[in-house]
Amino acid sequence: MEYLGTLIKNTRQKKQLSLDDVYRYTKIPKEILLNIEADRISILNPTYLKGYLKIYAKFLGLDVATVLKAYKDILPGEEKPVLVPARSKNAQETINLLQFNPTFILNIIVVFILLFSSFIFVKHMMKKRIKITAPAVKALSKKAAPLTKKDRVTKQARKPPIQSPEKLESIKLAIQAKENTYLQVSVDGSVMFREVLRKGQTESWVARDKIELTIANAAGVELELNGKILPPLGRRNQPIKNILINRDGLHSQIK
Image (tube, rainbow, N blue to C red):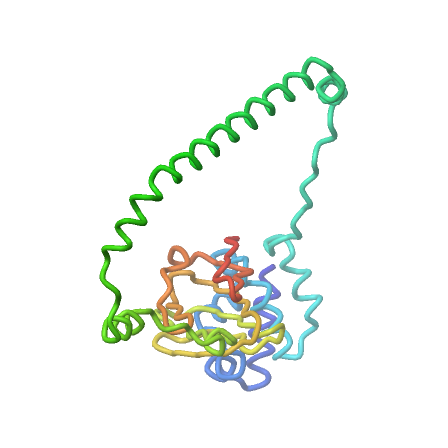
């Protein structure tokens, strides 16, 4: 694999491009570019290595498929579907026995009758208690002094204001980088940001329905959702994909 890193480096030098030039156009950090050219990609995060190789190869005019094929041994593979084991014959026979056993069904009916009888008894006792206490409550209500106009105004003023529905029609998200980290943001299904967010840099977006995130360093960013700071998403250098933010809140899937 050594010849490929040398090929990438030689191609860059033939185009008279420095690492600063490559970073300026691709936003790939220089340390990652150096590791790719020196064939030290085994120390890079495999989750985002494939994306870095695609961007760098395309920028240099190399065949992307050839570059990815050379590194296929360390790139992350496709996830295999989880197979649900078939139900065994003994388990099926047990289920059939439960379904057609008359004694089992009779016991269920008896339990249901007992529960229903208990419910009726409790309901009857509650009605009886209400009838007993009603005269006392009525007597107390007669003794209570009527509310004055001032008291009614004060009571109405204490009611909390109803939040306007317009305030919930949009999802506002701001992300500030505490460390350099790769970030991809999709707003309502369209990719709006896909590059390295530098330390101290802040970006914000407004969505109608949803915002989807992919973050290479979970602890390297701080999220503010509709003016509220969210807790850290994970550990340092921990990649998180398929983060979904909608009207129900934030949902993340750690990879």
